[in-house]
Image (cartoon, rainbow, N blue to C red):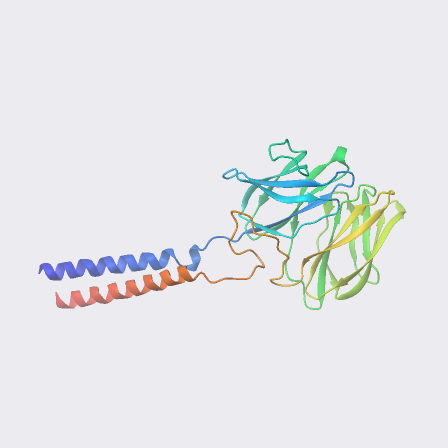
Length: 286
């Protein structure tokens, strides 16, 4: 009798342990995806800076970007979702030096952002722009405009022979993405109210690509256009290094198999099955 009861207890424990082990390591309990963040320097009279990122949770500070100059835009970095402080300091200054500019960034899981400093130095401000990296429809690419030229408070941006990409875009704002035909196109930006202030650029749009046209100031009081490749297609987001605290699979990043979790899941399932067989056998002998 004691042997049978002991066998039943062992079988029940094996069943419960195996079921719990398999459940805890299932894909449903996988970590949420990282956020993607890149930095940009859009202040024409601000010299090179170092940019720091500080997580509100844990207070970890890291040197994110070093010696960033006007018009520079970094590759995307993976960061753990959460609230961050972005701080700019003169290049080479100690991390303890008071920041010349700081602002906050709330990074959502699976989302992409551009954190930028814009405007002349005396009116410098930090902004966070939401980047949409959804795949455009077949045969087209997607373009949007970041209006970072203080010389032209409002601009129109048109693709010659194609759609209007921005209409009356205000300084320090972004537009939504516009589908444009794949191929080589000419883009013209004009200051609203001052059409003599304008700039043009030739852009090659690859099918499936996602890009940004940045309107910037020039030293002589004009404007110029810079083009950025946000993503060349599904799974081809341009990444930078992976900072501390990151590591979960980011949107658009290559998927990896967690062999340890898979092994434990299989072991849990086998343990559950073995426990069930022992329990059934013990019940038949009772």
